[in-house]
Length: 635
Image (tube, rainbow, N blue to C red; front, side, top):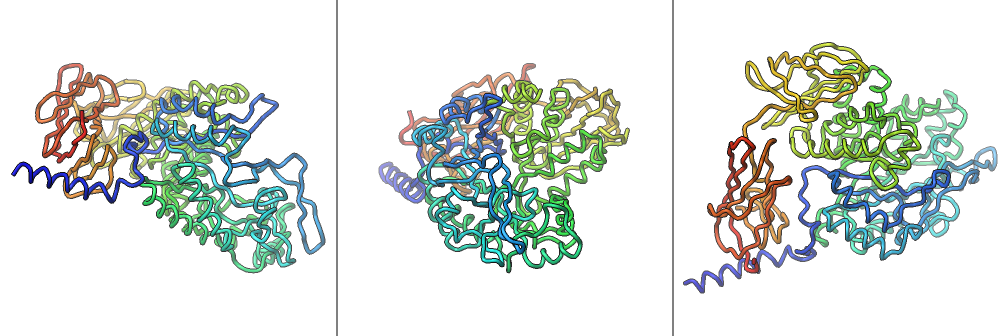
């Protein structure tokens, strides 16, 4: 009977392993990454000879990965990973207009020479691939940027696929519209079937299979051109200089076919390589024709970014992406800094909801940031040491699970650029580390629930709101004024009288949860949570999921584990240790966060995993889980 039992188990193992083990490396540490939030660090790519900043090499990027891991980063974003060139000062292109040829000066922009060759200025392809391998060993995803939006002489599209450039009514290449703010080159036709075929069947598979990257960020996914309707509209109302329709296009051309094809290809490749892939984008607007006439008219008159805060704009392209950047969030922080209308607490929360429900977050999730590469120099004051902790707190406690940390705020080159612009990059690193940890720990900060909770004083510069889920509540209050303020807050904490503490400072506050008085010093954020008894929860494995070689595969009829498993635990504050038991036998004690233990013993059958947390006062809490495990190769 025992022999039959063992044969049955081995047969089950074979059946379970065969369909899912392809493409999964059981020794790949990256495959174990099951973080609830995505913390993305942007890697700089530009050269500034005046600042003594070269391009960071692939080896230099590899060297700073452990530092990023310490901050809590679990993804890096690679700007311009391919061989490329940058437009030179004074470089021009020819626009073919109704008044003849016009020379237009180009703004700085990356133009791709070879989409399949890693940037040689940063090192060899071997260096590039080794950097990716090291990132994976640390549990860090690698997401490169794909830009196929504009073309000029000397780049891949212009030189090899000129027919991919959008044609004007003059049968010549069309330039971006409006030119003054978007003076980057000729407009690429993302609806061209050959372009779609090249991107989806050449570039995407090469990057994912040959480079082993973990997703593709689509830069500037829209198409900025002027058609005959817009030309007539602008001529009727008059155009600001630089906003004329120079090269009108006949017809409607949308980037949606390309985006849809990329989404489908990425989902197909997920199955082939055996891991989740990420498909984010910079924005989710298709074309100018997908906007109301009055928004187009504003662009004609010199307001090209008015569309960003108009909920009537068609943003359905976002439905194809896992997330998009939220430039509106940075603009919101700017308004708070300037003590604009958004610096009233209710207005801030209302606009944040608008971002999530009506603007860029309507169809997908948003990645919020304090500052990033585009227009970085215009927002560096948000990083000033006096106030940066307030803005990083607003970023980390905003709805959503994506935290974007732009270039020059973490290594590499953060110290040089920080010194140039007058901010303290070590201070930023400290606060990002602290806030990322808090974002991970309190799941209420990862959801979508948010409400204004400020009773008084309703003045500019005081932002206060509640975040909550079915298990916990968090109250955030930020004072960006230069004087301390005594605030009264209507929290969601339960009871006639409560005691809460600020996880940033450790200070405690007592009172009525519906009229809680909290003193907030000048330029100070607070994150308030309830004092709780000892709490502990098994986060991995999840109940009723299948795990193979420490990797979550899919929901299942029971909690089934094939091979080894890392037991991960979420414990409350003030924990001295966490003990790990199998069938009431103590296996391991962990004294430091994150609390985890690798169970890699010979084991077949049903077992009970139990974890016990003990705080510094000796109070205990435990969590249990029954699992079925088949580990024939354990130690």
